[in-house]
Image 1 (cartoon, rainbow, N blue to C red):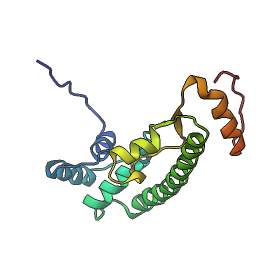
Image 2: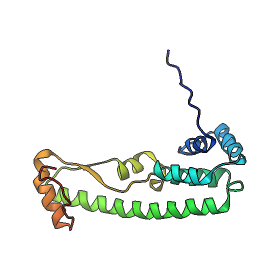
Image 3: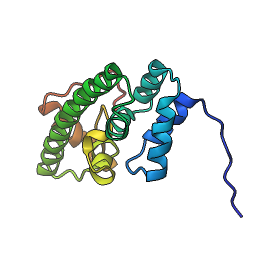
Length: 164
């Protein structure tokens, strides 16, 4: 039989873990509201949220369930950072489409993974998944053609060995 190991978290980290999800039950929503009533180190919560890439989820859940309890400046910081991240996500998604279309036009099979792909597949709102780069899988035999396409699109080689 599997057992769940209990981990004791600080209230700040616990709140972040509770808010770092796309689905929140009524019971958890009540626990979040109760936790927000307690003294919290909001600077730590924000730092942890951005470090772990869950700032957009934190913003969505706090503003949905307890905007009346969270300091306005915290919600404003979360909102601004979330908006900046959403803008970056849109730019990266557009670039991903351009890259995939260019590679496929040159006969290179390509499979996007992680980041934008995960955001589209898992989250109801792609802005809720932070990503800062694009990850593509191409066949090993297509690396030279892939590099040529990337260079033609204006990408530059940065200190990589010729086989990566």
